[in-house]
Image (tube, rainbow, N blue to C red; front, side):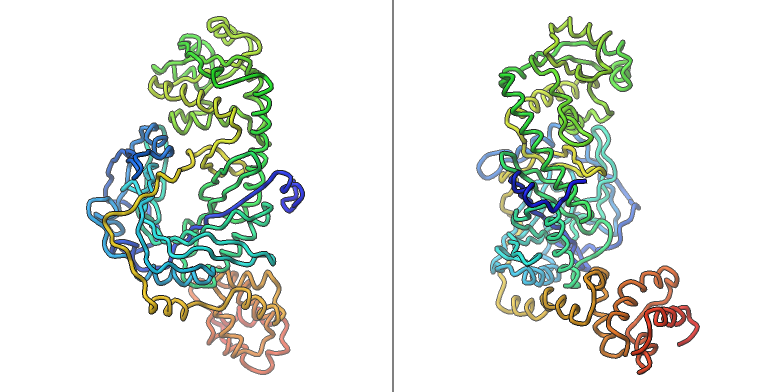
Length: 561
C-alpha cells in the first residue's frame, strides 16, 4: 500500500486536489415549496416518464455534458410519493418563496467557514440532464465567497458556499431506462467548495473531516446515510481535472485521490507511447465493417448472444495500435476499460464485456483471425468489435473512435464514479460553464444587516477554540471527534457542569459508551438529568471508568440509581 502522506512523491506528480462537500440542511420544508422533509421511503403512489433535452446557454452554446446525456436516449422514470412532492418538483408550477429557515442556517455555516457573505442573492439554474432533477436544472444561490479553514496548521481556502436543491435518489440504471425516487428531491442542501490546495491524498481526507466536524458543530445539518456526499477533484501536472462524484465516506477519499493521480500519470505515459508510434487523429477514423455472422460464431459470452437476439457486430481497425488496449491505468484496470466505460454509459451497452478486441489473449486465433483478414488488419493493428442493438452500436462506434482520439491529448475532463477498489470509472463528461444560466422565475434576495446579525448570534464557537478547550480537559483527539461527530458535545458540556466525574470518563460515557447503551436499551435515553442524578455526588470524583460504566448501564436498564 502506498503512503498517502508521501509529500515528495505527490509534489513530483504535480498533485492537486479540491473538494465539493454537499450536506443537507436540517429544515422542516423543502427549499422552494412547502413539501415536508421526511425520512426516505421506497413507497410511491405514481410513476411518470420523461425525456431530457439540452438547452442553449446565454451565449448560444450547448454544455458538452448535456449533449452526452442526450445521446444516451434514456427514458427517465420518476416514482412519486404524494406526501413528499408537489407540482413544483415536477416543473408543473413555478417555485414558491425561498425557504428562510434554510437560508438562515446556511448563513451560519458560511460564517463558520470565514466566508465573505453576499448581500444580494441571485438564483441560478445549473443544468442536470442525467434525469436526477425533473426540471433538467438545479436552482442554486451563492451565499459567500473567499473563506478559509485551518487544517493541520495550514490555511485552506474555501472558494464558496452555495445553497441549492438536492436531487432524486437513483433506484436503477439499466439499458435506456433510469429510475428515480423523488423523496430526496429539493431538500435544502449546502455545497462547500474548497480550493485545490490538498497536497496529498491524506490531506484531502483531513480537509473533508474538518468540514464534517464544523458542520456537526453547527447543529444545523442532517446526518445519516444519503445526506452527505463529497465530490473529489484531482489533477496532476499535464493532466486535467477529474471529478470523482458522490463519495459517501471520507475514509474512501485518500485511496480514490491516489489512484486517480496514478491513472492520470498512466494516461500521460500512454499518450507518449502513442506519439512514439507516430499516431495522429487520422489513425482513428476507422471505417466500421459488419461482422455479425463472425461474432455469432465467436462464442463470446455477451456479444454472440446480442447478435443472436437480432443485434449487429462491427469491427474497427486501428493501425499501429496493438498493445495499447492492455496498457495498465491502475492496479486492476487497462485502457480498454476506459473505452468500454464510455460505451457502457453513452451507448447503453451495459452487459459487460460490451466489446471484444485483439489485445485480449482469449481473442487470438479462430474467428478473430477471420475478422482480421476481412478488414485487412496486420499484427501491429488493433481490432475492436462492439456488438448489440444496431442504434446503440452506431453510438458505440463513434464513442470508441472519440476516446481513441482523446488518448492523444492525455487526460480527458471527466466526472467519474468511485469503485470499491479505490479506482474509478467513467460516469459522464465534465460539465462546462455553459450549464449555468440565470433563473427567470425568482427575483434576487436582498439580505439586510439584521440577517447577518442573526447569523452571527447563532454562530457557535470556532472549532479550534472548542478543540483546544477539550484538550485542556485531558480529552484525546478520538474522544473529541466522537463528541462532535456524534452530536453529543452539548450533552457533554452541560453534564460537565453538574457531575463530579473526571472529564475523560464523562467523555467516554457520552462519546463511546452511549452507542452500546442505545443499542441495548433503545427505549431509554441518557440525559443531563440522569447523569447528574448518578454522578452529581462528590464520591463520583474518585470513580474509575469501569465503575462509572456499570452504574450508568444499571440506571439505563431501569434498575435504579
